[in-house]
Length: 209
Image (cartoon, rainbow, N blue to C red; front, side, top):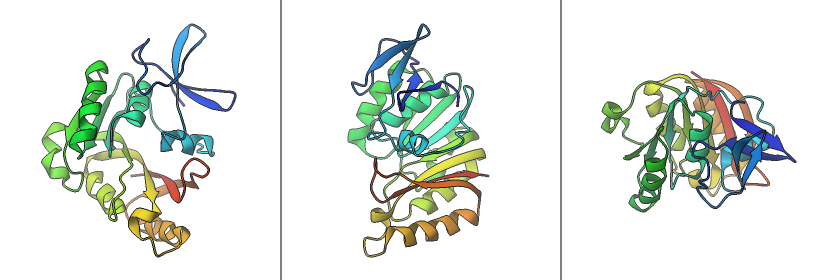
């Protein structure tokens, strides 16, 4: 995995903006390079890697579509990894996007987009085809949102499924199986895993177009 190191069972990403933390995370120096602590309790992607994700097809030159960027915690680490690429950050909450914009102003490869990911046609003119889609959206139709946005994809992707946002009456495992089947109708699912103890009732799926 590029621009990621693991020390004492903790993950760190190579800091794109040395000297700057994003959410008061710890900064360390390793072999003369500054890295940022990647908190798995604040980032589901970090949690997935610590829980055994075998591959993360994110490269230094990757173009990424990030759906559900929120205030920019995980997108900033994706920005560290794809240091020479682009990270298109789609977020619908005006409050969250204000924080996100502040982060993007300091990171040359992050581009904030205030839009609803349900309607990819609204921002199609702002982005190009991407190598990787990452989605973390707590909506009942979260899988369908991903499928709609796959029109931009020419590679790999990952999605965090939050069971309680889909149906609080069903057991999470039933929901995960159902959503996986939906994914398999459009993609090749490469890996799937749970995110406990970092996140309750969440599953993570890595897939290929």
